[in-house]
Every structure is written in C-alpha cells, then in structure tokens.
Image (tube, rainbow over all chains, first blue to last red; front, side, top):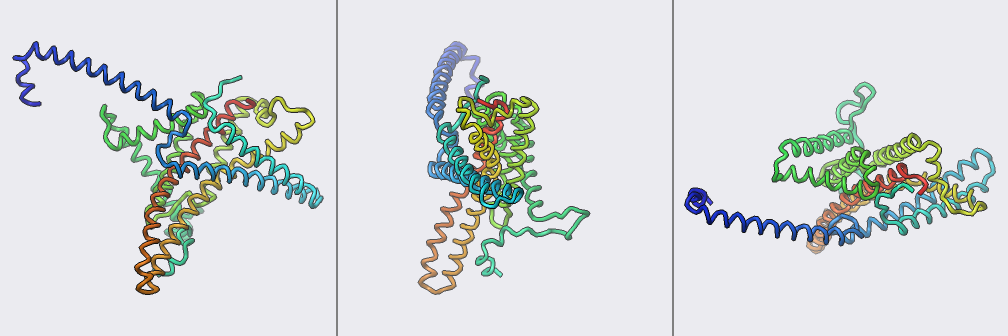
Length: 124
Length: 251
C-alpha cells in the first residue's frame, strides 16, 4: 500500500479509472448485500431470531407449553381452595375451579400454538 | 469436605450472609454480591462499549451494539414500534437475566436466577407494569382483555373466568420456568460431577469409566450455555407479548 500512495501523482489517469472501478465494485457489493439481507430476513421471518440450537429452541418451547399448562391448573386449584376456605363449602369451588383452571391451561397452550408471534398488532 | 460437597448438589443454592448477620436492617449475602457483580459487568459492557463509538466497532462495542439491536428487534417484532417505550425495561430485564445465567455457569459462582423469589419479583414487576400501564392508558377498556368478542352470552361468565385464571397464571409460569430451568441445569451438572468423584474413589475399573460422566458434563455445560441464553430470550419476548396486551387490549 505504502509505495502506491507515494506514486499517485504519476498515475493520475490510472487512478481515476481505479476509482470508477472501485465505485462500480462497491455498488455491486452493496446491491448483493441488500439482496442477501432480504433473503435472510424472509427466511428467518417464520422462526425465532435465535441462530442455531434447534434442540434447545424446541426444548424451550416444550418447557413453555408445560409450564403454561401446569400454571393454569395450579392457579385454578389455589383459587378454588381459597374460595372454599372463605365460604366453607368444602369441595364445591375446588372442583369447579380445577375444571376452569384446566380449561385455562388448555387455552394458554392453544394461544401458544395458534399465534407463536404477533408482530405488532395494529389498533382495530 | 470436597466429597461432601459433591454428594450435596443443593449446597450451591445456599444463601450465606457475607459480613455480619445484619448491617442495619440489610443483610448482604452472596446473592446480593453476585447481583452487584452482574450489574457492574453490564454497566461495564454498555458504558465502555459505547464510549468509543468507532465506525468499525471493536469487540466490546460490537457486543454492546448486538445486544441493543437484538432486544430492539425483539421488542419491535412482538410489541410493535409503540412497544419501544418499554425498551429500557425489557433491555434491563434481558441483560440482567442473561448475565446472571451466564455468570452462574462459572464454577464457584452463585446463580441469582436459581432463586424463585428473584424470578418471581421480575415477573411481578412485568405484570404490575402491564396492569398499571393498561389501566392508565385505556381505563375500563383494559378489562376488554378478559372479554373476547364474538362469544355466546351464555358462555361469557365461564370464558371471563378462564381468561382471568389464564392472566393470573402468567407471572407464575414466567417465573417458575426461568427458576426451574436454572435450578435443574445446575443440579444436573453437580450430580454428574458427583458421579465422577464417586467412580474414581470406587476402584480402578470404574475410575477409567468415570470419563463418561466427565464427557457428559462437558456436553451439558455447552447445553446449559444455550439454555442460559434461550431462557433470557424467552423471558424478554414474553415480557413483550404481555406488554403488547397492555398496549392493545381486547384484540
């Protein structure tokens, strides 16, 4: 690089040519980069932006489904138990809210399956 | 002492006061120490990484910019551009969870996110922000979150109850998932480490075979690294999804 810089005055016409070539090359490169970015973004649109780790991603999704389902049942159970404590109607609310909690757990799982990501919902 | 530690895989989660029992009303434990370390590391990364702002970023600057871009695209993707007003909250949560997961993987450290009270505090913060912002922004209209449109009137009470239970279950599933993942991973690592020491102690033949659990530890550590990142990501993206509910209830 160093000797070329010192010779620049002598190869003036050469240098213009070089600059034009460089500009064309840069244009080519940037258009190629844009096309590549577009294809990458369209390819990864459907999946999470986490690169690699298919097993890990699947496991974390599975764990998410499990925890949402179990959390629904547990919350229903606890609510029913507490209502029974307050109104002393021992198994009535527990059974009712256990069923509702199970339904809520299924509803959670359904929501995960139906809409994995909701990209920026617009106001309706 | 070493054998005892290997046999007790829960030992790593003990919370010990570091200096005295109390300094005033505050007890400074190993958990507090690691929280301070995590906040210090994040501040170091972000302040030092953004101080140069060179055109061609160095390693630290590239890491800081990547963290920003990653969280920003996550927030925009799942809560829309309006969700960007919550970017500081999501970014802080993501970085804290990520760094505490990663720091916890270093031997002899303490994993802050393996304490359910820490993860539940984060989840309660998220749900609190969702409720407060939803009520301030939409008032009574926020309750439309629990009343989906197009449901038969006869079914409405059940649907509303199910929606309420589903909403209450969110902070629980959010906190338990992160806590359980970190707890289970670290216990698994410690149990396999216990296998190695026990097999070396048991005789010549098993000592040779102890290379197997050692190899398993290496693989598990790599897997735990992935889990550490994925759980922080899942926490951040679910925060965004819940905040999206606060911004647009009753869709």
